[in-house]
Length: 352
Ligand code: TMO
Image (cartoon, rainbow, N blue to C red; front, side, top):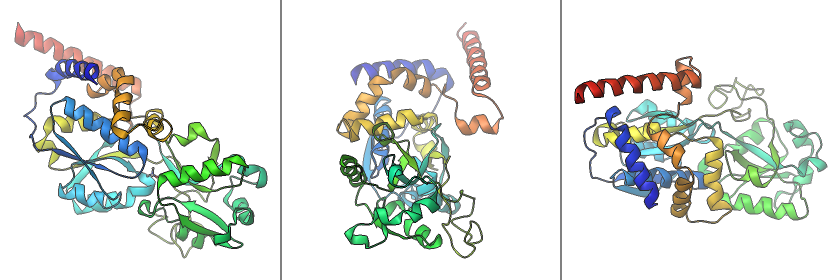
């Protein structure tokens, strides 16, 4: 951690000409922690970066939907993983009420949906099609689900609407909510031994993709409004009759007051930007290597120093920025380089 802090301090000094900002408040920046590993580790990664920049940081464990109301009110300062599928609705609702805003996208592309380990396909060769899955429902039956198939959904607070989907598509499945993310991994691990067919909630980026080969079930394609307008999707009378977006966003959200109270930390937050592989690795350090989140964050930071230095200097172009401007990543890199050169010239003029 020491080496990293020193390098980071050097990086921050180098970045000074670009960010002449008022001093951050010494009040703690409050970072919320939820119930899946990448979010917990990422929160510690960003918290440790902010601490290395001289900020005070406090972590609070909060509900993953109610958190948007807390950010809006400023009780919590930011949210680092706004997954479109699970939290888009709560996030948009808070956005409409006012008090929080979009602090930029990660470059990661997300998907959250029904998923099966590959061995399941041997017993149900029509997969990944959802109709084929439904015809195979009986092979997923358990004593608790009778002759219907069992689908193990995520913890209740992720609001995956598994039950509504089963009803809207008239599927022969019973939805059971896992008590925790760890229960999902335990279930896959147990099924692996004798290759029991299994269908569970899963997502990407996640450590699981490096451990178990598998696929998402292909439901009727997501269309905007599928969760709001019954007419959208194949069943004209019901909501949630579509799969989740296969290319969902992963956003950061900030309390509106953050940029005035902690301007420099806010700048850091807007620069924070991780890829699928980086986020999967954050989760892996906890879910496979069994590190404590704090240690996992230290380890991740130590292994990614160059990336973090570039990221904090604003050198990692963000997806939304590139798309808004119709620019390629290369265009953006060149643009940044030109701005940096120009600022260097101006600084020399001032110094000279
Ligand atoms: C929000 N999650 C990654 C747990 O689906």
